Image 1 (spheres, rainbow, N blue to C red):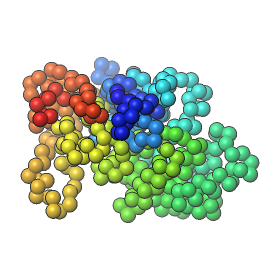
Image 2: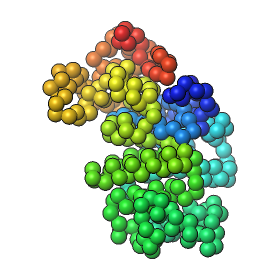
Image 3: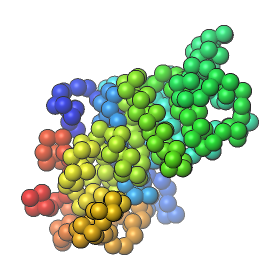
Image 4: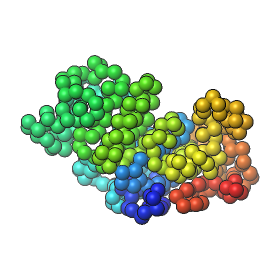
Length: 332
């Protein structure tokens, strides 16, 4: 994968995933569930990389496997150039200070029996940070950082709204001063009125602390707003990688085109949208029995016989733009 950022400057990736695989055992030993199958991408320091795709495409599995909350079935996960795929538990524990996660559900991800100060303080205690009197000061700083008050630390999670709970989850992730965060659908469980507040908070924190982030979402409007680049995932495979602005202006893969066509548009554009839309036919195939060749071919309006026989290589078709499709004529 290229190590060139959107400005064309060569830099070393903070996180690099090479041919990542995650298979789960199915009912039959010879038919594993291929949740993630040969995924490669990189994330630069301070970059927000979006990961999009339908439900069941493997987005959350990629994020959790990357942090080794799940063990991979193959491939490499590199952090600052070091392969962390097989690090010992003790070495990985030390590294987790730099790699954190914001979970999707702010109701299920916080311990209801712990006060907020203990939820946040647990991360500090694990890594031996801010001991003694400095602990309470640090917790108060973190609460204020995410828009809460220091006195909220004595409350329990059930005393907060969904948006406030997600802010607590963000404070917990930031407590150990990470360099990289996986944000797994961080606003999907929130009311629309609260989503913008949390997104703006993440954007502010990203700029303030130069955080790199893997932002997993199915909301394309949010992805366009917050992400620098986007990875499009389908049935555990990467279909396209592109700068966010370029992807939303002109998607190059048929699946990316279908995703964007399905995204709601302003009423003034609705008629033009309906005219140009190519809706996907059928359901997402089973990851236990994916189609041969290109996994998207069974729903692709441009599929040919060759698509069933050839697994398309993810290749760079223009600077910074990667695509997995054998139909080069569609680039015209």
